[in-house]
Amino acid sequence: MKVPFLDLRREYASIKGEIDKAINEVFDTTQFILGPDVKSLEEEIARYCETKYAIGVASGTDALLLSLKAFGVGSGDEVITSAFSFFSSAGVIANLGAKPVFVDIDPLTYNIDPQQIEKRINKKTKAIMPVHLFGQCADMDPIMKLSQKYNLRVVEDAAQAIGAKYKERRAGSMGDAGCFSFYPTKNLGAAGDGGMVITNKPDLAEKIKVLRVHGQKSKYSHSIVGYNSRLDTLQAAILKVKLKYLESWHEKRRGNAEYYNKAFKGIEIITPKAEIWNYHIYNQYTIAVKNRDKLKEHLISNQIGFDTYYPVPLHLQKCFEDLGYKEGDLTNSERKALKVISLPIYPGLKRDEQDFVIEKIKEFVINPV
Ligand SMILES: *Cc1c(COP(=O)(O)O)cnc(C)c1O
Image (tube, protein in one colour):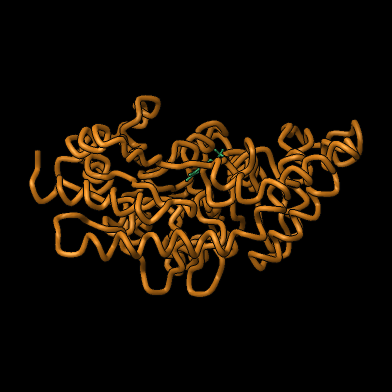
């Protein structure tokens, strides 16, 4: 049996009529840039996340970039983030001329360890960017406390966590700004790139709106230098259709995760830990195993899809060599990078496919080849 890691065709097939209609309606109006669907999607996402504002931008990366830019982060500043994340989290900091400062993770949740943050705060620190990895919120209470104590901005990288909750609050709604990605593999995925910033701060919302259109407040009048970073109307129209199904898709992912958790009980696999106060939306179901690379071969030979999030922690990336980190500095991130593997978890995954994945993994763990 061939089990794809992610099959977006299944999702499309289930809502094809609605998606096609939404696309056709955009073509009927041809308002491709900042059309009415962008505004209504922004309102719907703000309502869904219980924030006052939401601003559509071109990608999750840009959502992070524009947020930091709006807070004035630039040359000479430092921003603290997790060493175990997708590249963007650190890339945007460096692209603004600031310095990413990496903090190790809690080895059970894969999220930034709040205990390790304070010792990295200094006079240059401008912001903390926790990442809600794999669909589970980082431990936000201690992070918000530190931000108050040291007057730092908090930008939540909630790219993988739209709809996740931390103590009843939605991912992205707790910091000064929350950033989402609509990259096709995220729980709410567009047909291309897209992103959004949510916030309760009117001045920040206004600034990001200006930044996404070249820094212009009114046409051809530029008070600041901005970007071209708008969310396409076509993407917004597609996302509006999908948003209606998002909660039911989260539930399916959670059900699949629970099914794996039960099946893997008692064998030598570290299954993902969800804190009891979190509502985990399982953008990824990531396990840690010994002989990870052998397991990969075993899965390939059985035509089971997987991916590795992430094989190299950010502090050891070649492009950050100049920051002076070395192996042994952030050991939880380094160890996990060698052991993690993410399994198929998407809502359209069929039970017999999941059973096959479980059978093949158990076979490997119990009788390693
Ligand atoms: C996907 C992702 C991003 C970037 O989003 P894009 O829309 O691809 O630019 C940033 N951070 C994390 C943790 C992500 O998973």
